[in-house]
Image (cartoon, rainbow, N blue to C red):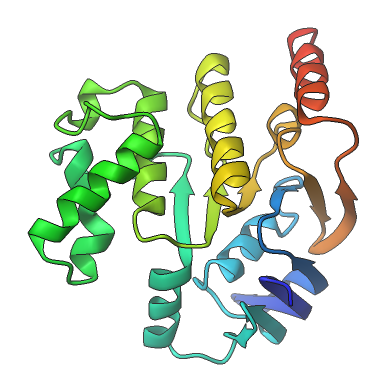
Length: 245
């Protein structure tokens, strides 16, 4: 059974008197432990698709099954519970609280879940260590580099043990060196912890880290390809092509 499955999903938005079909009969499945890149131009439907995967929106028609459960018909509270248990989110802008330390930022999902303070700190510290930030627990975001801030955001997504991480342009605010570091961290988490990763990017050199790339256009999936060659071969070629532009 696939971890994520969408079946003939249509998503329509009412914009004034006009109906916009953001997704048009999308069907696909993502297996546990896959690393998938989602690509496509602006308006292609990739962001709408990610919102559906993240239980932030519902299909107009069709079905979305998450770990075998059809979540499309659930109410707001039930969707929030699904997000809390099964999904971690990483955003381009980090979305950290500026006055909170790295440890406190990572503790937030545990705080919202009612975990007591004495239980939160060890879990948050372990998550920070897992992303290479041991010893930085007391630093505030303005004391961290962009790459370190994104590592804090990744630790926050990991702290509750969610099996799926959804990352929306996670390297969009980072330079090349930091982008490589973040993508290598995602690869490590995927390979060693078997976390399922779904990542939106418009950069082929970032998508090259994934084992599968799905491309959207006009609300439809226009290609769904497994990666060819080793990850090192793909990423080296993609970065070389990017530098030569």
